[in-house]
Length: 252
Ligand SMILES: Nc1ncnc2c1ncn2[C@@H]1O[C@H](COP(=O)(O)OP(=O)(O)O)[C@@H](O)[C@H]1O
Ligand SMILES: [Mg+2]
Image (cartoon, rainbow, N blue to C red; front, side, top):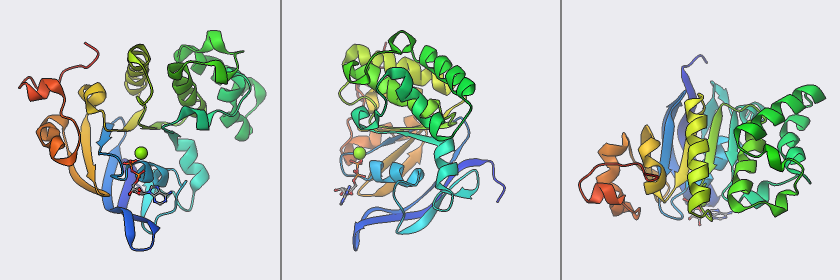
């Protein structure tokens, strides 16, 4: 199948338990370079959707395609193209040093040593982690750990980045740092999907907003078109929008 859509999600349904769909009949596609925020209250199905995108979960029915290839049938191809950063970065740490941790993915791809080293150095520098390369990841701050989880994904050269609740447990400065790196990655051509219930922090930068509720998509449009409706679905409307000033940058 030839397509200009980088991700295609078709009639995707997933049940953890019989007849209790956690997501139901989800259909949408993503073009290269989009920056999509998926908002929904707890339990609306965001994490389940993300795990289906990279083949960590298998759909009950429906299918996900990345560059036209079925994720269920090509999970290695899917993971080379789509990197999923989990909500809790601790679950993603595998190396004893920051460098080894970021190198883990490309080592599994059995790339040549020189190539791995070049890639990892570049990415650690890009994410402001190079000076920490010999540190034990367990000793990093929350923001540094989150960036290391992203570095581990970027070192696989994935063009699609999927971030699940990236701002949880980050303080103000950690959030500011992360925001600036996410913007950098978007500007350098990555396609980005972010799940969050904290719209305010990120929505200014998004090109598209998808609202999920009870496992279904109930809105998919430009952020300004949907922002006034979010509170009906248990998501906080950004203050600027509430006060009639549209969508403003959270970071000032
Ligand atoms: N491992 C699991 N087993 C059974 N039900 C689950 C599991 N994970 C999530 N669910 C259920 O699936 C629904 C969607 O959850 P989830 O995708 O985690 O939503 P969100 O990420 O938006 O909070 C919820 O009703 C949740 O209770
Ligand atoms: Mg979740």
